[in-house]
Structures are given as C-alpha cells and as structure tokens.
Length: 241
Image (cartoon, rainbow, N blue to C red; front, top):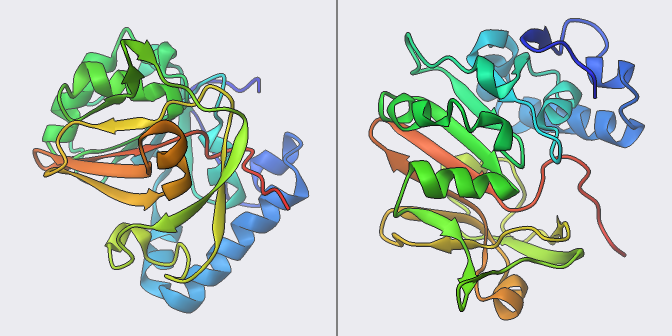
C-alpha cells in the first residue's frame, strides 16, 4: 500500500479499498457484515454509519492491513504513521487500531496506557502483542517455552466463541457455528498473565493442544478503557476445505 498518512479513507462512494485493488471477496464480506448488522443490530449499524473518521485511527503496519477491512465495511477512519499518533483531548469515543507488527509505533507507544486509562479503546494484532507486553505489563504477553518464543505454523484451526453472551461478540457468529481462523506462520500465541482480568472472546482447543494457549481474541479493561488483541491478522483471512 502507498497511502498518504492521515488521510481519511472509506465512504462516501465506492470503498477506497476497491480502488486499490481489494478483492471482490473482501468487499462482499464487508457488505454481508453490514447486512447482518442491519438485520440483527440496526442500532449498532446506525452508530457505525454516523461515526466520524477521526474517531477511528489506524496505525499502518507492514504485515496486517486493518484499514482494508474497514474499507470493505464502509467504516470511516484515518490512517497514520506511528510517529503521527496523538492521544490528547476526549478519547471516550475513540479507537486506535495498531496493525501488526506494531514496530512503527515504538517512538510514541508510551502514550497508549494513559490513553486507554482515560477511556480510549485499543486494538492490536499478532506481533503487536509485544507492544502490550511492554506498555501494559502483567496482563498478556507472547507465549514462551524455555525462554524461547512460541510461534505458530501456517495453518487454519477451528475457533469457538468462548463467551457467546459477551457484547463484543454480538453478531459475530452463532453459538453453534463452525468457524476457522488462519494462523499465519510465526504468529504469537497469547499467554494470559492475569486470568481474573483478561477475558477470552474466541478460543481454539486445537491451538491449545499444539501450542499450550487457546486464546484467539482477548480483551481486558484498563482504567476507563479497553484493550483488545487478536492472534494473527484481520486482513487476508482464509478458510481451508
């Protein structure tokens, strides 16, 4: 991708992801998500449609492309370089999404704990787990075995809803639905250090058998805000049949 940092993307009109060559499958997936929200949660869809681009900040990364997922869903957002991060002002209606690997944010990542403590939302993917390990010490970290980092193979594993009634999972999939998640090669399994405070949203018993940790998506409260982390990537997911 070669985008100007700080430029709002998404609606109106054709999603900018399609203009950059987003696959038809990504666009269709985004449209299906909006149709499902219109059927199951019209209030949530109305909130998405009224969102301002400045309320959703995506920090660019070389290995994940969350902005493409937002484009496909027609969700307004601002794409920035890590050095452009600003967390002042009212953050209670703001989410910062950090693409894997998160290295681009190293110069400004120390702003994140205070941002979340004041009510902001933070989402990270895959290798950006190391960012959470540094800045939110004691909650989650990259799994290790005998001091060596544990990494996954390039594989697809079945996933299940760990807490089907959790509001963050509303509309994700039915409690009895079969779903699979792509673990890209060298993804980091999540080691939960505070099981009384970190909640698992999606899990994979098969992943636990292989790597000792089952969490695929987890979150924890920090002050007034919330941190959400996802194993592997949101963009370029696939299914094996």
